[in-house]
Amino acid sequence: MNKFKSILQSIGAVIAGYLVSALLTGITIAALGVLFPESYTAENIAWVVFNVIYGCAYAVIGGYVVARLAPARPFTHAAVLGVLMAIFAVITGYAVSVTPPSPEYANQPGWYYPMLAITVLPSILLGAWLYVRGANKYTLASQTT
Image (cartoon, rainbow, N blue to C red; front, side, top):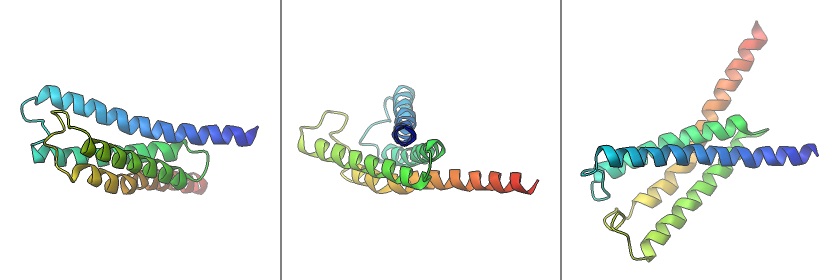
């Protein structure tokens, strides 16, 4: 029974890390689309680069969350989340490239989804590292007092 609980916690940690990252991304996209409707477009390369940057930042947060919630081996859980999100980016990029593009994706640069796939795993692992580093610092501090 304890093993089953650990497996459920592991799955929950990965799902929570994904949801945090995805929800932050979705909220940001919606907010920027409302605040800057004329310039927040796929053909504006500055916005596309900004998307990659905040996507990395939100992946760091997702990595922190998955590591924090993982019952053990936070880097393993973060790696699982990172690989899954990289696969999602590859699948999405492929789907966008082989189907007739919707107007919002028609002018998106071809490097966008590969860049997401390349940057998501290191970003998530950075978030896990930040959590582990902070958790270890807290543990060491409490042991010395």
